[in-house]
Length: 201
Image (cartoon, rainbow, N blue to C red; front, top):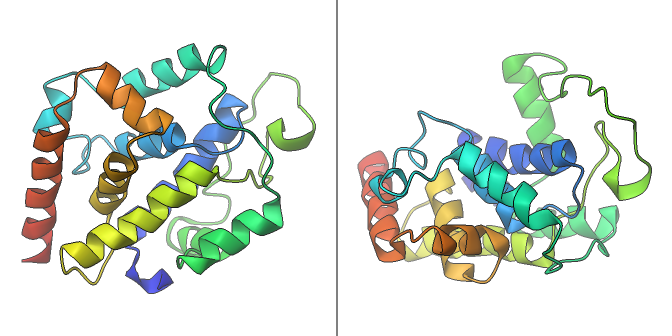
């Protein structure tokens, strides 16, 4: 199933983990997946009219994640690294293979974040290249992205399918950020579906 994920979708999954690490947060939640999807300004997600109309971009999502971090306790960091890797592997994502593929395409160390002058932290909140587990909801979003691809009769999983997974899951912080901004969910679904049909044609 791993081969169904396009390179862009694989990179988004890795970017979500990098975003959580950069923000010093764990586990990787649906909000980090949303941020990763919006982080490519020329990509199909960031250019979706339903998001542009409400000025939802990576900067906005990041600010909302930071703002909500102090008061939102919706997820906990109880997953182990091994369980998380196994869950991702079950839906066809091998993080080590994704890292290898990105480094083959973009060079060794392409995923390394620049050094942060903030002090290093221990455990799940450490900075650096340690693995951060995905939340139950984030794993569900990735599973739902596959279901969305099957529903649309696509033999690939693109970033748009992952965003459709966020919308279908509907309870995570990622979808809350969109709802609180007043994003037209039906319009966004239509935008994403149009983009996917254009890509598949």
